[in-house]
Image 1 (tube, rainbow, N blue to C red):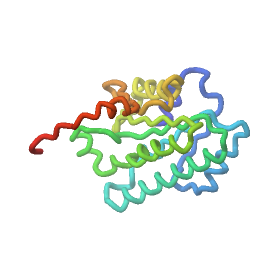
Image 2 (cartoon, rainbow, N blue to C red):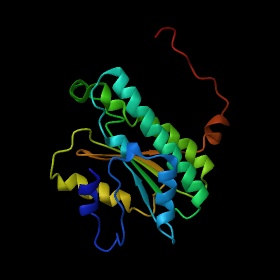
Image 3 (spheres, one colour):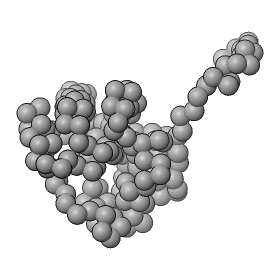
Image 4 (cartoon, rainbow, N blue to C red):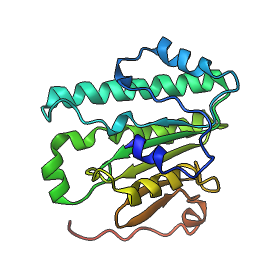
Length: 199
């Protein structure tokens, strides 16, 4: 998924990149070394470990991988805060907000792999105020060579004006945005919410 996204990046946007395969075997010290490799810091860190499917859809395998992904993301956030030279974090997951029964039936329990990263990203935005964090969900099943989807993911990766302000879903059917807005004007009305008698 990342390879296709990087290949479709706008020309001249990537001058240096480091791709880490088998990232779930990393320790916190390994993550710290990756942050220290670039003396000037990293303009953008792409975290896509939540896209990898577990060994199987058996509950122990899903829990094991989900725990490893969450732990790795926690270490990444901790090191980003320490390093103080990261300009943005892009979190990519697949199928996290999928609603259709067909996708869930085909993917199985493994579709939940990146689900913890959504909440962690929202919490991290409060802790790492100087580091914008962009959360992006995409199709669970991506066709090899689907350059249209890859190009749209790459576009989202480098969309400067909204980076870190919204959570997005990039699907074959379009771009869907979840915005966070202040609830104070709605709370000011102080109207009771009408509850239905049943349901």
